[in-house]
Image 1: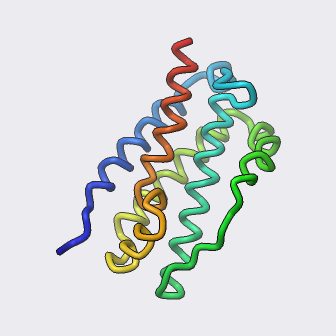
Image 2 (image 1 turned 90 degrees about the vertical axis):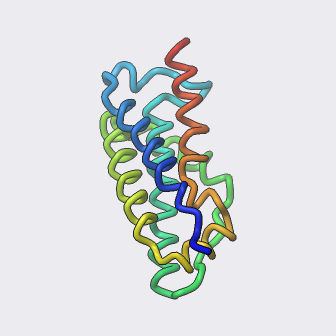
Amino acid sequence: MPPDRAFVERNRASTERIRKLSRLTDEQLLHPVDEHWTVAVALAHLAFWDRRTLDLLEKTEREDKLSAPEIDVVVNDISLPFWAAIPPRKSAQLAIETAEALDKRLEEFSPALLEEVRAARVRWVERSLHRNEHLDEVDAALKG
């Protein structure tokens, strides 16, 4: 049975949501999402974790088996000041470029290795799950 490829469209849809947010003004990109995050910080966060997944895919393909070093959740707290220091427009650009690159990489990835990655953590394949969590928060914050 071929692997379920429905993730491709869900990932593309979440990337399109990022693209729409990237068109916000700089002032809107600095809009608070919660106590510590702005829209730009949320986009930088998504770019970071998508890049982490791109790296995981590269290593998995190179080693022809899942290669996923554990990253402690504390990395979000450690990274926050760095993400906040990124100019808002650059956060949006990084989020779009990284989401597009990851979507393409996942679409072309070896089906057997993709299933191994998915079995280890579905969110590494279904990027829309992670993206939409934060994009929903951003949308809610922008609506006030």
